[in-house]
Length: 153
Image (cartoon, rainbow, N blue to C red; front, side, top):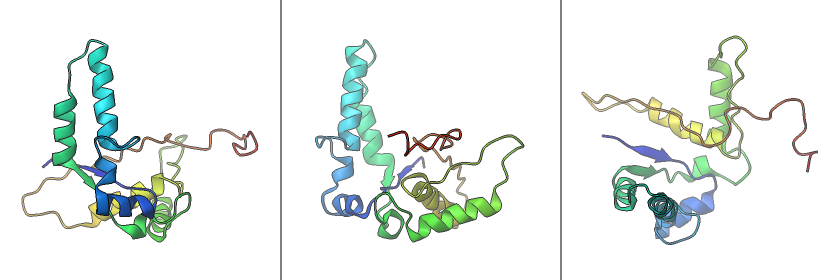
């Protein structure tokens, strides 16, 4: 069935999810459940339908948070699997002429990409049809242009 896979980007978040279910909390600030509730409330206040119950049901039934400490690693740095995922991408992917490469940073995108590769490498169940989409909320490509983003601070 339909699933949304999420990859925490730091091992403490994996621990908090495993022990307390923190990432899916409906009340804790900056967590998925709270974000769904607040977004649904805003939509309803602006005249849209109240989809809070449906969104929380979707989260409860279809969200899979990957709790693999080895992928998460330290915040702001590559983990072993994320570095390997980036190398695998760099070796195998050739974008169309003129198109930029996907920027797989060690902070976020390479960790999610490592999870995607693990899912692709799994043997599908008999008669299971899988369609996987890599959706990363970070920009498609970075850094943009020749400007040193760190020097701009």
